[in-house]
Image 1 (spheres, rainbow, N blue to C red):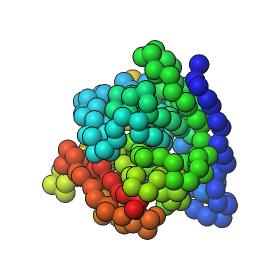
Image 2: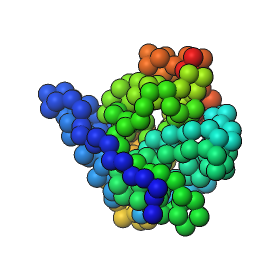
Image 3: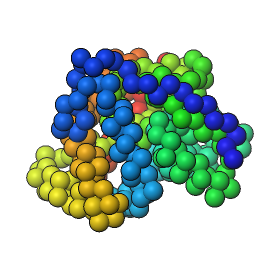
Amino acid sequence: MDKLHIKGSTQAHGDRSKITHFGYQEVPESEKSKRVDQVFSSVASQYDVMNDLMSVGLHRLWKRFAVQLSGVKTGSRVLDIAGGTGDLSKLFLDKIGPEGELWLTDINIEMLSVGRDRMIDAGKLLPVCQCDAESLPYPDDYFDCVTVAFGLRNMTHKTRALKEMYRVTRRGGRIIVLEFSKVWKPLEKLYDIYSFKLIPLMGRLVARDEDSYRYLAESIRMHPGQEELANMFRESGFERVEYFNLSAGVVAVHRGFKV
């Protein structure tokens, strides 16, 4: 059993007159979170297998690098937003030890359930929370590190979510975002073939869900590039913002501090 389960607000923000992107589709803001929720409910059981296949295992190295950049230590407080199946949470727990505090959160209950069960199977008990990153149920200035891995691009209002992350980060703390980004230009055509041909095919054969993986590929193209996201960090209040390209920019780790 989890130590504590707080269910935060999962109601979509905005009104139906406002339009946003769901992959390459334009949809009302109020519908995006529901559609994203359906995607992750569909892929939750095969999510880890697909991550290994799509990245040829590289996602594990990317996540380890992100945790190294976090600077957390024994006793730190960490918030893992959109933590899903718990890969980052497991790595952070090894860093902060039993003296630390780590919350595994996700807006999607199926993903969160997989992550909770994986933690239990590994003999690790930690609090889990179903909540919306745009309305976090945590006090101001609480966490030493707030982290998001491959979740920010699925949020309807990214700046609103970043401002919430800023709010709950303590002075001297930091945010770490690991996300797909803009690949090195000479590789763009090859990367497009891989993204729009092979990834949906793997989704159909392994996860039995080609459409969800087509959306995930499209959502990468709609996500802000390295510099644009860095500027969004600054607009949200973070300082000393920097980013690190990995695998020729296929992914990037952004880091910012609350000073």
